[in-house]
Image 1 (cartoon, rainbow, N blue to C red):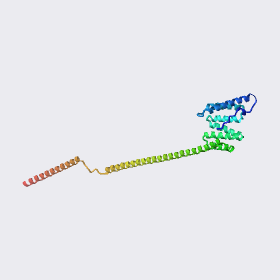
Image 2: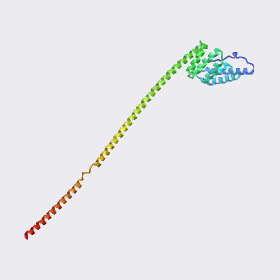
Image 3: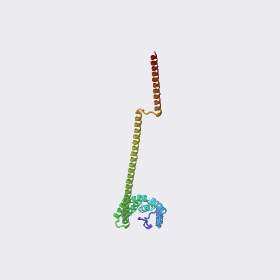
Length: 258
């Protein structure tokens, strides 16, 4: 990240209290900013936040000052707010016309965009900075890094998509197997229902046939009763015949005596 902390000797001398206040806020901002840079093992958002406040106060007194606007954007970036910093750098890129200033703005704009993983816009910003200052080694390095990160991101997205497609195919196969399983269950159920219907139909036909057949069979008791009745009828008939024969014989005997 390119920074622009100007010494007080570079300040434009303005008359009166406004110039004194501006210098005071700038000194405070520079001091806080430098404090934030001291510990490289952590991000000192508190110091950079104080620097932002100081630069904003300086800009209230001198709104169009490029240097304080540039340092303000840097202090915002250092607070891990790359989206807000990018917005500030974009405004500066439109305002400034000096090649050196414009090159630094595009360099830091590229950093802010890269921090948001906006690879194509960051690459474009670095290229714009190099068109103005082709020999800048930091911008060359950051451009190469951004292109590398873009390629890595594309490869990861491809892997994720391939995995997603593979999982989707697995889900389709599972759904098909489940559908086939359900279909087989339905077929088995239909077959069982059909077999049951056939059994019921066969039973109904059997019952109907039995109902239609004449009841020729009689029980043993009924047969014995019928046989006994026939024997009694036969005995009675024989007795009648014997009586008739006896009466006839008696008549014949009387007639002979006379």
